Image (cartoon, rainbow, N blue to C red):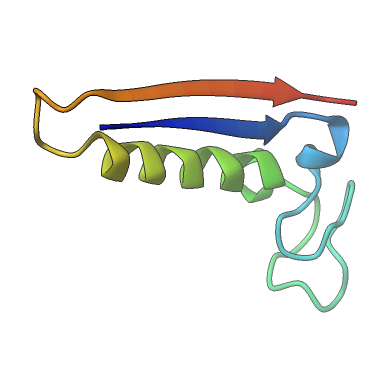
Length: 75
């Protein structure tokens, strides 16, 4: 059993590139090219990490008492 709170930043900067931090276009040193796409954003990386954590945290024991809250913030 356990309890977890995930706090996720959903501010505008989460639309920036997860690798180089580029707001609209990637920096020249970034492995991506051109305009920042949604799939390359910080929020996409955060969602992917949250989903992986939740899958692991849920486990396979249906009788386990696990509690979860997700809190978002933007400012």
